[in-house]
Length: 354
Image (cartoon, rainbow, N blue to C red):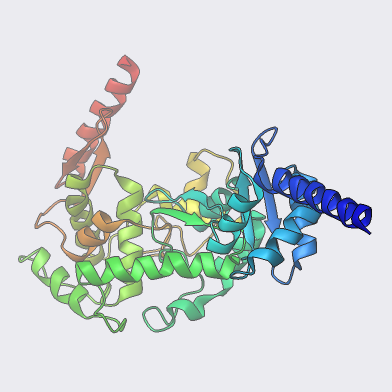
């Protein structure tokens, strides 16, 4: 009988030693290792996924420790393993839900097409999946832009942290939420999210010498459309109110906006953009072509940042009707076509000199 208990004791000690070794000894992943644990996975399935990825030493030890510790549930998500860790450390991470977040940078002026590619490049899913949401899920903005045909203009430029457990709808909603916060800050929409009439009063005071026409934006969507054009035309914050004033002045006089970025966007929508504009593109058949259609395009042509939204709300007071690049990252503004032609000639000479 003594020998039997002795054997049991030896086996128990051996088992305890093995368990301590398997649980406490850190495992060093061979490289950055990502493990996706989906909702509904059992402890056994989680252990198998971690063992297969080389993040733990033993499935059995993982399961045993899970039942011995008997603490909070393990959370689903994508986890990155790149540092040495033992089973206790791994389970602590899974209980905290210390999931991996992918960084998505959305610069000012990005279109929904650009954002979709950024989502895909971050490893969060196919670009087409996000684009489908951006083109259809207008319920997210129906209270502030009831006539919007897409989320273009309302996917606010920022740096986002998304997990692979998030849906494309949730990512788009996060961007729209950020737009709402900034739009409220600048006075474009009140906190309730309802459309503001501030745009009309701001435009009326922008050029005291002119009578604001019916074409001047008087709702959120039109203001965002103007801001998106301003965003595309200049990256210099100080110039944006002047650029906005040019376009408002042209709107009031029923002069075509002649904004090149609108043609690019028209061709993007049609899948016809080749990466460069040519003279023939100025006649591209689209309501977004502001060379052939007077007034604002049907909707935003990109996603403006805070500075462009402020410029669209509070344009400078000017009597400018034209502007052109100066080959140094800025623009020259003109009141007459004659002045503008001289500025264009100066720009061409500067470009040839470079």
